Length: 433
Image 1 (tube, rainbow, N blue to C red):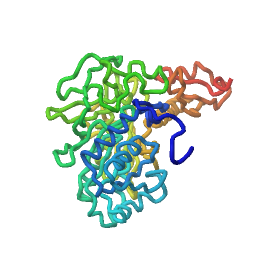
Image 2: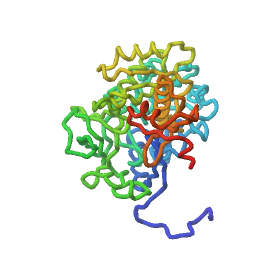
Image 3: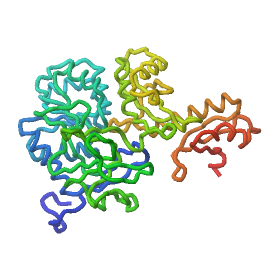
Image 4: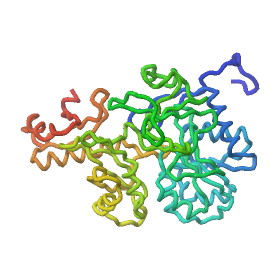
């Protein structure tokens, strides 16, 4: 295209500006279509409340992430702030974590954008540079534990601003105020022109009216970045996505306190349902990350023959830590709020699976848990079959795919063992046919 002109008429009305994939942590990503009005709104909010032409932002998130593209890039365009990208791959670029504090000193960074897993990684590295220019860090994508918040403030001298946004709302929804009261664990106050409503959910996920103060329900959002009726490229995915015509159903669970601060309590799809009792994985993860040897934790439900599912956790350790899974399981059991939330299993891995922007892939952890539990059950029963893989079947959901260790193993033998669990299984040979 020519560099000095458009080759088509410039439309004056609001319209679709881009297509963004969601993070896809519960399963397959969806494609969202933000509009120009949402882009302008996100840039205006960030520059009006936070940034000036004297600020320097470092954003180790890739530009295919909605937070980097809209609140950060658009805020810099609007305010004139300096925008530093350490690598095209964001945090995952080579050497970013090891040199992060030196980058802050080199560019005189005043704000940086982060996610909880990245904060945990940074806290494993010494602050080896002059970071006196740093005013704060803006953290989103998932709740930040109080322990990690305090570690960061002690190491850097600045407080993290926790905020909340999602691709379906062209990003920004709420943030703790830079100069006002910051509530640790809260994602702050709704931003200008943003309405947040907490709605009651029944057992089937249907909404049944607004929640009272401090009552947990589904977070629903209306603001200039929300696109009623046309959020996703696939029309079927837009069904039941809105309530009252304009409030986007986020699928996140939360509450609003008496001061108007929003608190995220978990994902509706991430709830662990133990014998009909809903368990939020957040407090379990907070209990584990309170251990000095734990860097990151991800809690999910593992299959259970009696309760349907019970909590289990996979963790990444801080470099040099030698704590065991059993020790961590006991540590968590002493700190969770109820006995039902105590993890049945704690597994230690070299690295938790994450999206490109640092969110823990819970669906991958569920695969691990199903494979481990089903494999152990078959082995203990003496059935010579093994779990080859766990796949996300479009019709059946997470499906354990088995291989025979002995040609004589029958369906009845496997069913006698795995029939007590709720998740389905199939033979690899049958799927191949």
